[in-house]
Amino acid sequence: MTTPRTTKAPPRTLLTALPNPRFLLTAWPWRALAHSANTMFVGLAVAVVALPVYLPWAMVGGMLVSRPWEALSTVPMVVGFVGGLLMIAVFAPLIALPLGALERRRLPMITRGPFPSGHRVPEPGLWAWVRTRFTEGATWREIGYLVLLPPVALLTSMVLGSLLSAATVFATGPLLAAEAGGGRVALGFVTITSSAQAVPYMLLAPVCLVLLLYAAALLSQVHAVIARALLVGAAKDELRAELNQVTESRARLVNAFEYERRRIERDLHDGAQQRLVALSVDLGLARLDLEEGGDADRRVAAAQDNANELIDELRELVRGIHPRVLTDRGLTAALEELADRCPVPTRVDAGNPVRLPAHVEGTAYFVVAEALTNVAKHAGAAAAVVRASTSPGASGQPHTLRVEVTDDGDGGAEPANGSGLTGLEDRVAVMGGTMELSSPVGGPTRIRVELPCGPIPPTPLT
Image (cartoon, rainbow, N blue to C red; front, side):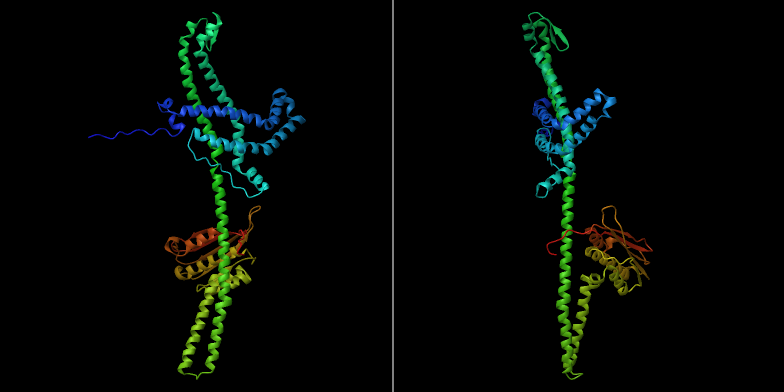
């Protein structure tokens, strides 16, 4: 019986390949070396292109070094400092944006993706693009990368250049000694006078090359960590932008739903309900032509009673879709009507009857209606209180409507028990509000809802 041989999968990133004893036999050291070489050229190009951005700060730094006791009080110091800020604010994003895109394309050489930029999709137009790009966090993180790249490239050049120079000198030591003709030749930390003395040091050339490959890998890995943190670590911005889009689309759907509900209410009120009323009147007139107490009169009377019952049911249905009193007289009057129709004695304390946005009034109304229905059916309460008030929001924020329904019933209400509280919570959440439920066993039960009174995005249906 033979057992299948298992082979280890090759390392898929530079970080996992570095500790591997067979690291030098893989492609990763050469990929890291190529990435480091690219970094040196990219860093040099960035230093040249961004030179106007650095010049004011270089002037400020020079004055601080040469005349530290005078620099802080001189006009050139202030001009250089302010000029440096303006150059960064205006021109740094224009350099950092293409640099970030280039570096995200280079990252697959040493690590695995994906590498989202985190930039939001701007609206059409140049000004919309400028406003979006200059105000989002992803752009300013890329500016931070723009500042760090030249020092990283300089460090990479110094380390790899030193190791490459050392390997070259050790490998060509005998030739250098022969050309010196018996003179003294410095091979790094030693001095030789003949080719024979240089031969043993040729063995250090492969060591320097190995160190070169490992140094390139370490520097590339550090570079990858910095690049991920500043160029790829902005996925939260993208998620935040998608969340904003979802919120706006959800609000538009709510607005469209409100429009459709009012259209249905209007059609029922002005169409089917009026026709049923006309039918009831016609049946009443028809009874005048019939013998009172006869079979035909009883059948017509029964039909008229059914029509009247259907009118009452239709009125209740229309009131449940969107109560007319809420549209005509506002939330306070609608809450008072709910209290009058509730079997449990209910007191309304609505404060100042200020008209609020329609979607806010509608949500508050149906929250109270569902809460009072639960009070009447499940709470076993003797009394209930409905409170509604508005409070100003923070600077630049809309007012907040607070609605609270309290009863002295048995308590123990749980949203998981199918009491309609889950639906209420979802409806409040759609409007960006919050709902709190306090219902200990033995009572009392309190439902508190807070709704922001800001507008929701318009829909083409309105």
